[in-house]
Length: 70
Image (tube, rainbow, N blue to C red; front, side):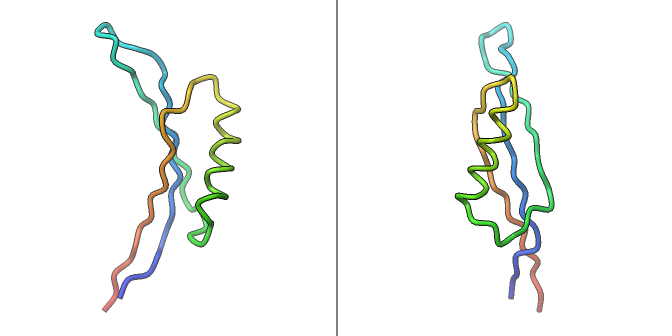
């Protein structure tokens, strides 16, 4: 059996470009998100956080960690 133990919200930003023109990324993660939080709520929160940043958001990710028990 598995149960949802933890949720993490990650925002990936483009902070610049290297000499080859490839983007440079920085990730900001927020741990200990309530696992029962709906995706729409997380997206709204991420959008609000992104609006406070000076860099453009490349992607928003939700990572769930499950604990396996016997």
